Length: 257
Image 1 (cartoon, helix red, strand yellow):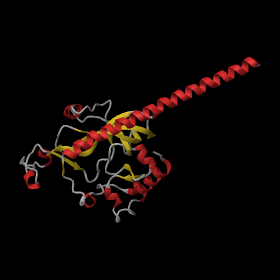
Image 2 (cartoon, helix red, strand yellow; image 1 turned 60 degrees about the vertical axis):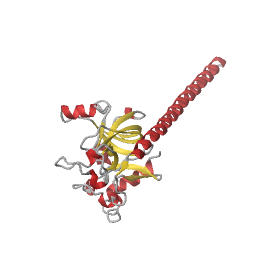
Image 3 (tube, helix red, strand yellow; image 1 turned 135 degrees about the vertical axis):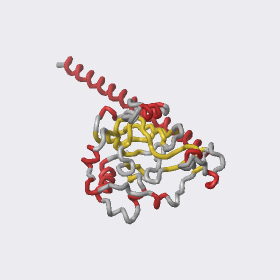
Image 4 (cartoon, one colour; image 1 turned 90 degrees about the vertical axis):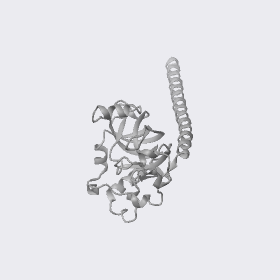
């Protein structure tokens, strides 16, 4: 009987030791992630500060629009979850400018804090995605359809000047913020599409596309998950979309962090 007691005690000590090691590893990983985030924040802010900010902040709430074809009566938590391969609560770890093209996109690293729908193996891992807007050149921003550079009309004489610009319907989050989005694995439309993304380090293995970013995309601000598209926050629209706003309330009730 005494041997059995010692065996049970020994197993208990080993179990506690194993839990302690696991907790320490988890804590170290969390600390390392936060260190990486702080480092990336400084790098991104330096590049952003060096660029000419061409956003029209006062006009942004008025410019933002509800996407044509969105029907709130069709929105539900189950439809949102079923509409993507992955639905995640994720932290923005990094934002990086991509090579300038006609459409300005920002390469984004996400740490998946929780998988709300889809393969749970992604939880605790990082993936890449693209967010609309960000850093580009004045030449890209201010070249007309005819190919003429018109930046001088906006006070930007040099076409190579770095500029920062947000998409009114989908403003960029800050590094360190937590977001909720639906994701689908990247499926290139053609060889050119594949090569263009590969030039920015985005492949079919690490890159996931955000599904419907102008609608089902939440950012945690001031302690609450809010729809990222400012158009949904307009006073006239607040009561028009009860189902979508209901999802915001659901996330704020059930999700921590």
